[in-house]
Amino acid sequence: MSSKSVVTIERHIIEAERQFPEATGAFSSILYDVAFAAKMIAREVRRAGLADVLGYTGEVNVQGEEVKKLDEFAHEVIFKALDHTGHLCGMASEEVEDFISIPDRFPTGKYCVLFDPLDGSSNIEANVSVGTIFSIHRKVSDHPRGCVEDCLQPGYKQVAAGYVVYGSSTMLVYTTGNGVHGFTLEPSIGEFLLSHPNIRIPSPGQRIYSVNEGNYGKWFPGQQRLVDHLKGQDGGPQKPFSARYIGSLVADFHRNLLYGGMFMYPADAKSPNGKLRLLYEAAPLAMIAEHAGGRASDGTGPINQIMPRSLHQRTPLYIGTTEFVQMAEQFLAEDRTVEPEAVSIEAIAAGV
Ligand code: AHM
Ligand code: MG
Image (cartoon, rainbow, N blue to C red; front, top):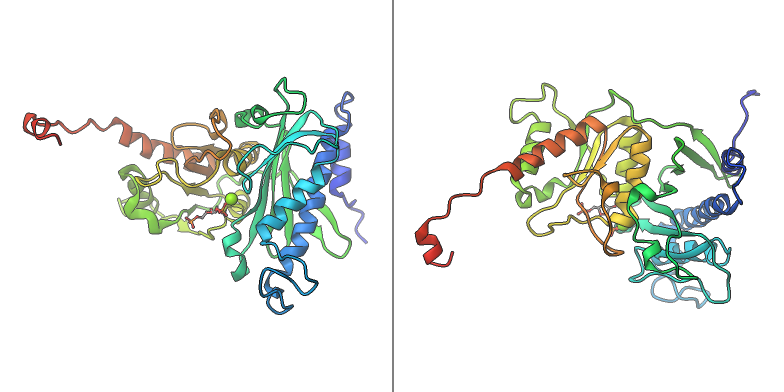
C-alpha cells in the first residue's frame, strides 16, 4: 500500500484555516457546504439520462412529486445547503433575478455566495460535461442582513472562487488565493480527495483555442483577425492552434487550465457584452486562472477589475494561458485604434 496520505477536502480546508489563527471557521464551513451540495448535484447529474426510463415524462414524477429541471434542482440544493448556516448575508444565482436574502428564521453572517448552479445545462441530454461555478465575497454593506451591494463587488475582492465539473469524474477546483487545488470525487466513499494540488496552467502548454466559431460572421474585425491568426491563415503562427469547443464553459475552461489554451466568448455586433455573466461565470474563473498563472480579460483589461453594476451583467471573456490572452488583447486593440472613416459632407447632408 502506498505511504502517500490521502487528503480529503475537509482536511485540506482545515489545514489551510490553521494558517489563520483569527479564523472563526465560518469560511471553511461555507466551502464544506458547497462541496456537499456538489455531491448532491453530481448524484442527480449521473441519473440525468434515466429520467424517461424511470417514467419522469412530464412535470410530475412517479412519486407524484414535481420533476424539476436539473438547473433549478441544482439551484435549490446550493441554496438549501447554505441558507441556514448563519455564515451568509445573502446569495445571488444565475437562476434568480434578484438578490437572495437569507430567510428571516435563520441568522445571517459576514459572507455572500454567488453561483451558477448548473452551467452548460443545455448539453445535459447529450451526456456532455456540465458544471457549477461559485464565488465568495465578504459582506461590505451596512445593511444588517445584507443587500445587493454585498454581491456587486469587483472580482479582485473575492475571498474564494471555484467550480465543479461533472464529467467522466466529478472534480471540484477552488482557490482562496493560496494556490489552485483540485479534488476528485471518489464515489464509493463520497469524498472529494486531493488529486491536483497547486494547479498551474502549463507553460509552454498546448496551443488550443476554444470559441464558438459559428459566430465568425458576426464578430468584429479584430476578433476575426485573431482567429485567422491562430489558424495560421495570415501566415503565422508557424504551427496552427488546435480548436476545441465543448460549449460548456466549465469543461472548456477545465481542459485549458490543465493543458494550456484560451477560451473566448467575444462581444459581437448583436451582443456587445458577449454572452457570459460577469459575476457567476467570468469573475470566479478569472480568480482561478490568475492564481494558476493565467489571465482573464474582457478584451481590454482584467476581468477582475470590472466594477459590476448589475447582478446579471454580461462580459466578453478571454481566459487561459497568459500569452494567448495578451495576444487577443493586442488584436482587439487594433480595432480601437482604427481611424473612423472620413464622412463626406454629402453623407451628412443626406442624414447617413
Ligand atoms: P448557460 O449559463 O445558459 O448554460 O450558458 C452558458 C454556456 C457556457 O457554458 C458556454 O461556454 C456557452 O454558454 C456556450 O454558448 P454558445 O452555445 O453560444 O457557444
Ligand atoms: Mg451559465
